[in-house]
Every structure is written in structure tokens, then in C-alpha cells.
Amino acid sequence: MVSKKTRSVVRQNKHRKIRNHISGTAERPRLAVFRSNNHMYAQIIDDTVGNTLVAACTLEKDVKAELEKTNNVDAAAHLGTVIAKRALEKGITQVVFDRGGYIYHGKVAALAEAAREAGLTF
Image (cartoon, rainbow, N blue to C red; front, side, top):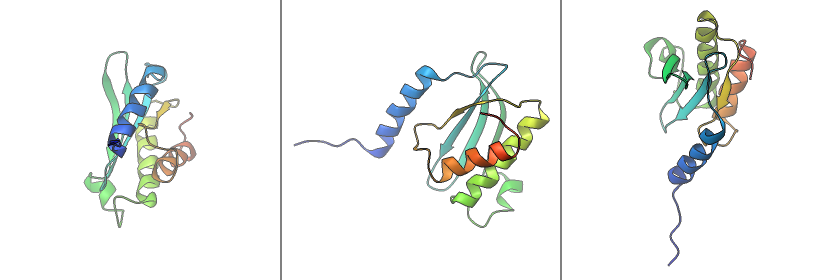
């Protein structure tokens, strides 16, 4: 009998392959995206030292207060603007986008486009 890999296993394998090519530096850190069934998370990471420079998620009170639901495209777009504003406050303007093995569509694309519109370049 042929066993089929689950979506999460396929995503983790894709993410591992992506991470072999993408790495964040001090000049151009990595914008990593993770989405669960209920929430979205975004971090800006300097991989040379392993530090998270900026983080935002839909679990935070100030972000959650402005959203009806935390797992739709509108929430992802709002999270993109929040992470971009926080990055610009820290002086980060350029990032490398790490989609985390997810397809660049829907929530992931909405987060990326909102971050671009708010001032990040990638």
C-alpha cells in the first residue's frame, strides 16, 4: 500500500530546501512566516548570530483587538503592516522573504504585499 505524506510533512521538507538557499544577515535579515490553523506569526531574524530582531503575531492583544478573526487574509494583511512598522522603527528596510514552505498565495501573499506597501523591500 502506498502511503501519502501529510501536508505538514511536505511543507517542512519544502521549508528545509528553502532554508538551504535563504539566510538572513545583519544588513538584510530574514522575514520568516508561520501560520497555524488559528493564528499567524512573523519574525525578522538575523541568522548570522541567531537573533530575532522583530516579531509580531495575531496572539498579541493590540493586534488581536483590531481583528474580527485571526486566521483570515485580512488578519494576515494587518500583521504584514504591523511587522513592517516595527521593522522600520528598528531601522530595518530590506529583508529576505522566507515563506516557510507555504505556497505564495492567500494569507502568505497578503502578509508579504502589506509589508511591501508599509515600507519593507524584498
